[in-house]
Amino acid sequence: MRKGGPRKEGNYTNPCLTMHQPWASLLVYGIKRIEGRSWPAPIRGRLWIHAASKVPEESTIKAMEDFYREIYAVNGITDIKFPEHYPVSRLLGCVEVVGCLTCEELVQWEALPEGVRLEGQTDFCWLCEQPKKLLVPFEMRGFQRVYNLEKKIYEAAVRGLVPVDSPAPVKFLLPNPRDPFSLKPGSIAASFQDSKASALEKSSSLSAAIAGARAAATQFSKDQNIRTNTILNNTPDSTSTETQMIYIDDDRIPSGNLKEGSIEANSASNQSDSVEEEGSSSRSQPPARLKQDTGAPSKIFAAALRGLKPS
Image (tube, rainbow, N blue to C red; front, side, top):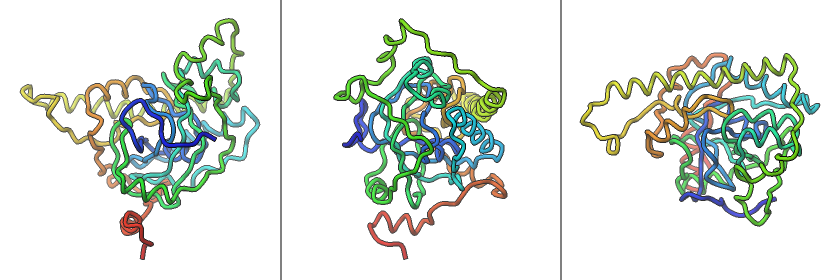
């Protein structure tokens, strides 16, 4: 087990990442082992996972659960316990980011189970281990890309973590165990030069599940394009992009490890990491029949921050 605080390249102490549901809970429950992004992981070590405010549609949840059923079945694993709820606007738990590879490198890494290699669907794949969840998810707002948790939130959350019984935990071996950043893009590519990884055979049901999962992720790409165009069209020419603060719905936050084009790279270059998500979208979604939970009441959260038991 890798111990110690987060190892990072940037200025992060308690790094957190906001993700859409159902991807966020699937990662915290250890079902999802690869977090896909269009940019390489800036940290190693503990990464807190926060669920964005958008309530997931039933079709999206079904598509992603079907995807993981199929890729686990490739390795003979059929008993997967999916989350009963997919709460939004909540801090859910954490994972350990132990490395980052390109999609091509992950697919060719034959030491990994085929199901893990099938998870690689984006430019960069963050390799995650040791998921832990919060017994009581904390209500909070998220931000773009990787950001630091407030100290009070971190101190309350770290006391409520419990281990997760993952369906098939994976250990990603570091090229240099003394260097936490040794498993990075290009670090294992040399080992593939003289050998070709066996092609991953895909059944019709697996191919359909992959297509469905990609379609589920694409919905956020469409939302982002519409939202970006609206902002550009309504921004006065005289307004400086360096000083203007834009509050924007969190649909633009990347939704997981399936290809969504270049949303993340474009949004990262055009917006500050500190731009807040807008927490109103969940209120506009019909709650009926959706697998979601309201999470912790605000008084429980407040009591946790004070280090007291909720009344």
